[in-house]
Length: 274
Ligand code: KIV
Image 1: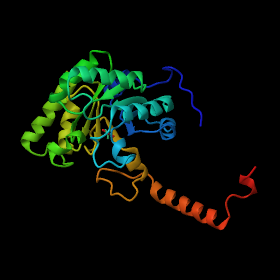
Image 2 (image 1 turned 180 degrees about the vertical axis):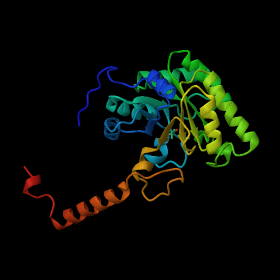
Image 3 (image 1 turned 90 degrees about the horizontal axis):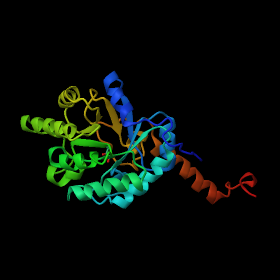
Image 4 (image 1 turned 180 degrees about the horizontal axis):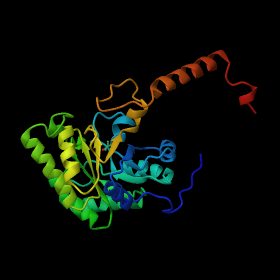
């Protein structure tokens, strides 16, 4: 598959994303990690890719996103950026790449743009990471925030738990979302929060909200691509996932047939030989 990216032409930009919120037009976001899948998603109309640190869980089998490194995100971002003719490419800043200080945050954001080809970066946290967001935005690198259930805080949260259910949690998440907007982010992911809270945040912010497990009122939706395609190697998907395909079954069936045909000599035939 060959796909040559023409600089900027036809690309969705952060300005387009802002205009969609103004028009009340919803947009579709998926995670992407690899060249061929990103090329398919791009031509199928996905408007924005997040090269998420979820890559560590779905592609490398880690039990959390915490071990994911800058080098890994740079590698996957480069593959996705090469495949993206239209979708805006946002690279996730992995754990440890921005929490240790604004200097590190700036340097790592630069790497994702320069080496990975990212057009924006994503930072988890609200009030506690607002300074890092502002520092990156000040370099003219667009930043997407991420509040609610922030997977890099898994140990603090005591697991992957829905956030913002109590009155205090509701106020905290709202304050975090406001801090992200005030710090200059162009969009914000709302993950694992009640529908009413996501609606309130979406209505009170001028930047678009991108929901995952946050109900229908967000300006956009994101899913982990493997989850929505049904590639899970048998693992149970969370409740908020809608499976649009069952690739586990298709892959297993195809590979079983291949194994059988190799063993019985049915493959390769003369048609597959030189
Ligand atoms: O890491 C990730 O994939 C994400 C998205 C689900 C928003 O943070």
